[in-house]
Structure formats: structure tokens, C-alpha cells
Amino acid sequence: MSLKRPNIILITSDQQRADCNGVDQLDFFLGKQEKSNREGFVFYIKQELRAAKWRDWKMHMIWEPEPNTGPIHLETPWIFNVTRDPKEETEVGTECGWVRGPFRRLIDGFQASLKQNPPIPPGAPDDYVPTSR
Image (tube, rainbow, N blue to C red; front, side, top):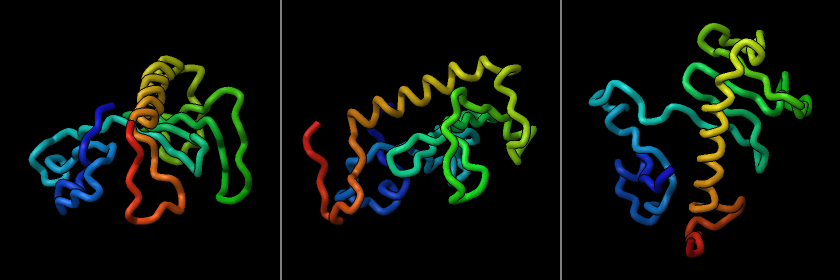
């Protein structure tokens, strides 16, 4: 992943926040481009990677059936086709194990981008400036 300016920076020209890691989706949101520049994204809660979504698929590494019931760390990630099963009721990892490859590349790419562009720490002041990379 390369360093790109997210839409809010492009729209507002907020140069104070211009050093961000994101994906430019402005043309997609304005209807000038049919396809999104993002094929997937990762779900974190605090420092914990919970799940990832790629195209029509979602992979959970940690499952929490209801909010605040406590996370279940899965020995093998659960995979769902969210187009066919939007409620994520039928795990299809055995039949569709091929999708683990694209998920691994997505997750590895995101984690590599965190080394290049560390996240802003919780509680950082508004004028926080990241250290040199």
C-alpha cells in the first residue's frame, strides 16, 4: 500500500492532516468512476485484528456473536460469502478455501503499511505529528 490522501483531505485541503495512509475514492463517490479503488479492508477493535472483508467475502479471526459478549479467538478463521449470506450464518471456509490467499495478501499489505505509516496513538493531541519514518 502506498501513501495516499483520503477523500476528506482532498475535499477540505486540510494540509495539517495530509500525511495519512488511505485510498482516494473521490471519483467513485462523485460518480465519475464506476468501480471502487478499494477491494477490501480490515476490522480492528483496539489493537486486535478481528476480521477482513475482500470483495464478496468476509473472514473472521475472532468471532463475537453479540456485542459485548466476549470475543472467541478462532483456531481456524471463519469465511462467509456476504452476498449470498449477508447475516453470516453459514461458514464456507472448507468449500472456498482459495479465498484465504487474497485475504492473506490484504492483511499482510495492511500490516506492512502500518510499519511505513504508524497509526496515531489513542489519546494523542489534535496537533500530533508522526515521527519520521
